Length: 134
Image (cartoon, rainbow, N blue to C red):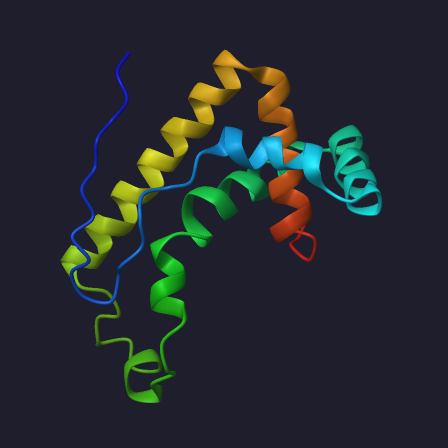
């Protein structure tokens, strides 16, 4: 199976680069200070399926191009009127392409290197999902 190639044109408000390498995120665990590493390893030992899902959503969706849109100014006219669109078709396409490419990377890592995948999930969960519903 080949790796997908996606071009991000930066149209509209979305300018994010392709998804990060989940393996590189997992490898950061080896360079964390002791206290931080202990928290990640504790998460690794107590992960639930919901923790895993939260970590994947953070990586594949929340911490991607969606962050570019979320970072903009609040607009009551736009956000409180259900008749107005909040995303252009181009932005929606970019969000979905990013999420699919990120998911592909995560699933490949899960299948090819399960131990590294578990570390990646624990790193994501510890870094981004501590306050999310479990």
